[in-house]
Image (spheres, rainbow, N blue to C red):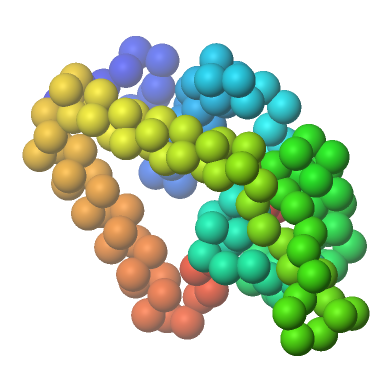
Length: 158
């Protein structure tokens, strides 16, 4: 078993999950900056994933993210200003604006997905693919158990 000397073996499991996520985020932000996306906000990734699935209105986006419409507006306005998101007219209701990823937003999402794949492959090279597969299975089981208990398993920006 490989144990980092910087992490106490008695560290609570939840703290380890949080620290690991922080390390992943740091590596991803560095990678994205090197790829030309150095202006990503901390909540952009959550919005990217929703907009990749469809073109919601601002209210629909807020509901899917589990945040207030005001919170969604703040994130979306920044994403529009930075060229990641665009508003389009709804085809059936002129009062509604749909949110879509711009070409730049699609490129950023594709790069983020590349990073996630590379990160997991690199872990496999360092620790062994079976160990990484086991870690993935453990995380999936935690999520599945929580979902069975009725806990909402949506990924939220905050």
